[in-house]
Image 1: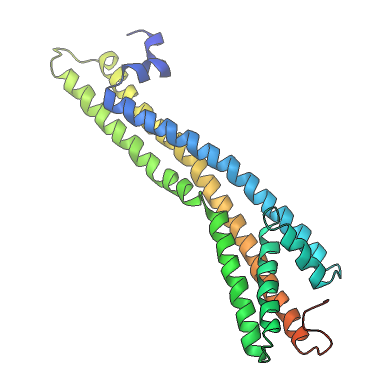
Image 2 (image 1 turned 90 degrees about the vertical axis):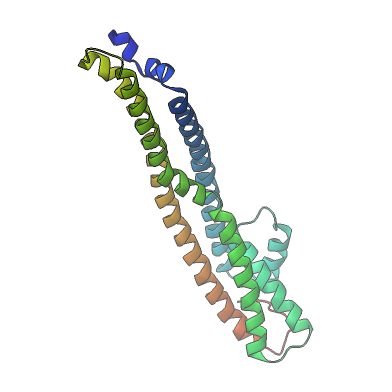
Length: 234
C-alpha cells in the first residue's frame, strides 16, 4: 500500500461499514454541536445585552408604571430580566387591585410570580446545553467503539495471511484510529462550549436573582404608600 492510500479520505473509504457508520454519526454530531454552539453564543450575548440595557433603564429613575408599560409592549422582543419584571409587576398590580392589605401575602405572590418567570427564562436559555454535554461525554466512547470494531475487523483479515508485516498491519489499524480521532474532534469543542456557557448562564441567573430581590424590596416599600394603589416610582 503506497503513501497515497494512507490519506484520511482513503482510510475512511476503506474502513468497514460499521466504522463508516460510526464516523458518519460522529460527523453529524459534530455539525449539530457546532450549530448549537454558534446559536447559543448569540442567544447568551443577546440576553446579556438586553438585561444590561433594562437594568440601566430600571435604575435611571424611570417610573415603574412606565417600565411596565414598555415591558408589556416588548413581551416577545425584550430580555429575560424585563419579562421577569413584567411578571412581578403584573402580579403586584393584580393583588393591589384586589385590595390585598397584608404585606406578606402581597410580596409572597409577587415573588412567586417572578420566580416562576425566572425559572421559565432559565429553562429557555439552558435549552441545547444538555445536547452539548451529551456530545462531549459520549462521542469519545462512540469513537472508541469504532476503533475497537475496526481493530477486530483488521485482525480478522490478518488470519489468512502467511506473513504479517508493519506494512500490512498499519492501514487497518490506522482506519480504526480515525474513528477515535473523529470522536475527540466532536467531543472537545462540545465540552469546552458546555463549560463556558454553563458559567455564563450561572452569571445571568445570579444577576436575575439579585434583581428579583432588589425589585421586591422596592415594591415592599411601595406597599406602605397610601397615595396610590400601584407603584409609581422607585
